[in-house]
Length: 375
Ligand SMILES: NC(=O)c1ccc[n+]([C@@H]2O[C@H](COP(=O)([O-])OP(=O)(O)OC[C@H]3O[C@@H](n4cnc5c(N)ncnc54)[C@H](OP(=O)(O)O)[C@@H]3O)[C@@H](O)[C@H]2O)c1
Image 1 (tube, rainbow, N blue to C red):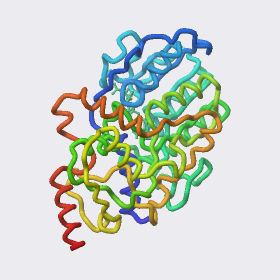
Image 2 (cartoon, protein in one colour; image 1 turned 120 degrees about the vertical axis):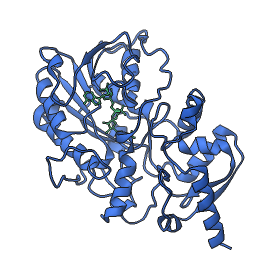
Image 3 (cartoon, rainbow, N blue to C red; image 1 turned 135 degrees about the vertical axis):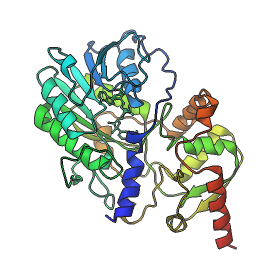
Image 4 (cartoon, helix red, strand yellow; image 1 turned 60 degrees about the vertical axis):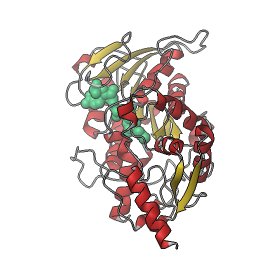
């Protein structure tokens, strides 16, 4: 893959890994047990339950009547689950607090460094019956091809590298998967590979940018063609599927994505307009034009990638295997609607500092250049 293209694709997907501090949605009823849940109550250990996707998973476990222990350093949203057992430690050499304990299952949500995943998997191998590792679709070697779970994975050129960057994120997650498998064995391991995780609480703003920007109205830049595919996973659908995998002993590797060819950037435009009731003039700016324009520092065109060359199939990852065992994905319009409801609850300074997308100036400049070109 061409290096700049690869960096663009990988950095886009890795953004969640290197995002700034949290802004959480109200997880209503997070500690209320669901009455009449038929599944046996399980003891769950969450490695990283206080970031973005972790709290959605914790809430779903609690809602279904399970017991959850949290393991983290005590730095991120430390007050989010005051009633839960919190074991303070560091994945980097500080796992002692987990020794001598037992759980039915562990969800490894915070594993980016292969050594950390190997250490926790080794320590927990005899302490849990089920290890579920949250990976990513960035593990695939190439997006020139349409990937399914058996597609070739990216490899680290130097396996000792531990710095997470746009370039190393995918190969490091692939190596994390390998390390988990070596320590746990495939018969007790579940690996989930989500694409862009979207919804209330997302700290990256990559998907949120589109409905939030639409709400402002006026002339709005949309990239490529309305028919260009995009793929996402709503954080709540991922959380539901994670809990299903634990409750139903679903092992193996699963891409967690919306169905191939089910959603386009044009659909996102329509959904964003519908849920915001905003009046926009959509201007579709070609992928070639965007590729030839350097974006201002801090600006990006998130979620969409031109469906050509090395990014051709970023949004064509098969999620059929997960669907066959029960993954359900909600209509993205619902995700857009709930993002806007959550967005309203954020403090003004957070709403004023979008973490992805185009700044007003950058968008205006691109639109002006595009119109000039098309005179
Ligand atoms: N966002 C996306 O679109 C996307 C897409 C695909 C896959 N993923 C995957 O989703 C997961 C990210 O989940 P997230 O956003 O909820 O979490 P996150 O922000 O990556 O992780 C934060 C959680 O991990 C804990 N943590 C971080 N470093 C730790 C350490 N050294 N030792 C112990 N605990 C540590 C944090 O608590 P403390 O700070 O208190 O320690 C917090 O609970 C990752 O595995 C990522 O690869 C994300």
